[in-house]
Length: 338
Image 1 (cartoon, rainbow, N blue to C red):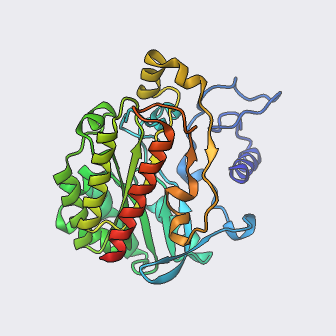
Image 2: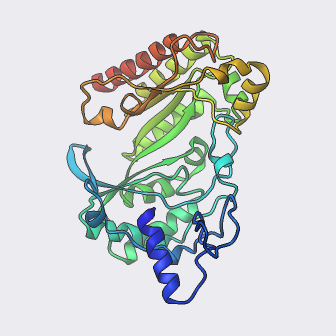
């Protein structure tokens, strides 16, 4: 970010253009506009390419994917989110509606990273594609630029998207190099799903998992345990759904402890009903473990635990942590057995 800002300022200064309107940039004591929450969005074509090999000590990650060692680079292309999940702060942190650069701009970034040595791209966007037309155009542009087969990619999507997309669209996803799609399932409880504005039924989740597998696209499942008012029985439903996904062909899992984020619906619910919880919030790094490469990309390598005696759900934090680790361990055991 610092590198990109400095290049943007330099480019605009050369052209005698104002720098104060760059989104996210505020110059203290300068002649910029008054500080505000969000600046004018930067036109995608003005975003400078960053040479990761030049600026980063560890520009890429090395990871074994489908039995082959890859050089993985990360990209984040989109802006905003059209959904309002009750636990998620994204819509609170970004007041812009969802927007996405052109496929040409996205593929420019991909090609830039391939030239630097990347063989796999990890898209960090929650929603890189929102419809089938975008997938088709992405494939067509890659083909025109002779990039089909030059890289593989991992990304995120929604269950309902995949459920409604045609077999042709899934074939195009596979042909573009997609090898893994992460999906936020969040909970196996119908009540919790409705409470967080993300209801999902088990049949759809397992059907989509099998659909991905049919096109050699691995499914990574994301869950959260420990929501406000969540019972241990509802947490067990999440465990059961995770195991069912493993049996249906899901390959990876990340399970997180629920954290209250200011501005979200669930935070406001806690603030109104149990404000004392918010006064006790503090976060502890996950304990050090001997982790293999796969664990470094999962929940156990990055979790921040809440205090063991803090009860946001109907059980305390130590019990939530136990159930999280049980879900991860049993899911991975089933995947290994199959």
